[in-house]
Image 1: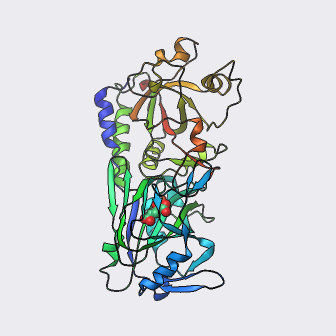
Image 2 (image 1 turned 90 degrees about the horizontal axis):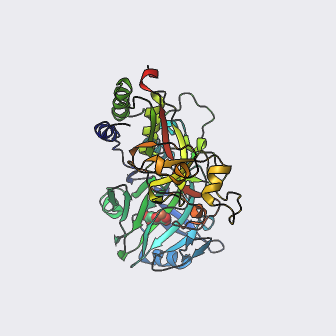
Image 3 (image 1 turned 60 degrees about the vertical axis):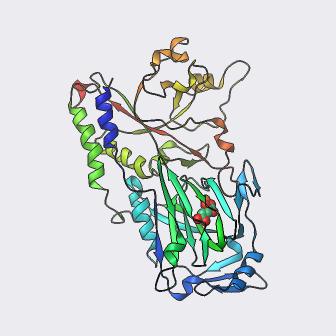
Length: 421
Ligand SMILES: O=C(O)CCC(=O)C(=O)O
Ligand SMILES: [Fe+2]
């Protein structure tokens, strides 16, 4: 076992201060604030000088903004009050790449293995938040396993309220677009890009109209790999965890007979039931990418694993079944066996402890069934359990059944001290 002091310093070493978002204001060429919408009777707005009448007409051309609940789209004013227009009904002349915005987002949101990837922005919706509009806390619906984030562009129309509040771990960011665009010398829009699994909420608009367009951000693998890296890894934060871990590996007192370290991830990842966890390794975000990379650089072979609920063990919060893949519907006879039984007996799942201090010997599978378990020393807490129902979960915008978010963990097997060089 690692001692509490050793664990404490490892935990402290995972310092990752880069926020999971980036934001600002951009003053585009004049046409960057133009909007054409409608089909037969198309209309035009120049957001640098939009009149209340322009905004009335735009609002009237929109539909109520629904969101995904379970397997359908619903309109529920207690959760979201706003109007929307689908991307097929409007067009903008915003070239995000030539404005440098894609590059800025790549610099901030790509880390670790994703540093060599690029970001593609796909126009998604236009929304108008009039007086009393809001959108309660949600995560954005995953629309592909390569979906990384969301980008919101807020036009410079007068409004009060409507701040976007984002929360991740125990931090919170409040983004007030209007205070950014109201005082620019030339007409500007505000933007904010964030990982789509971050919880976010649009506060009530108290006056005026807040007009936004949203994009889904996807990771794309560039064909020409060499020389495409856009950001250097942050050498200070990487070496902090790396150095501390390396120091421990050199010490014969740290896990003298070897052991397994576990890192709970801080982000959620879009998957289908067919996604290989290995693919997710190349899409890790923020702090998760930082931990993975630090282990990789120490040649520790970090592995991504899923830990599923184990209701068979007495204190079920303390135990789980670890698998090297995502499970949707395991094939089993529920009258004869249990879901956990299928995971352990048919799929090679390994009984593990989910929390520090839960002895693996007390797992039902180890105690009663004589199955070999694996004790994990959790460096960072395992955040939430994965359930079969994950595939029917509700997120933010329109429903999408193919993809769901999952939260794997990183497992690192440390050899015995005498085998460490
Ligand atoms: O308008 C915003 O700032 C965010 C909107 C949003 O969260 C969404 O459309 O999913
Ligand atoms: Fe959202």
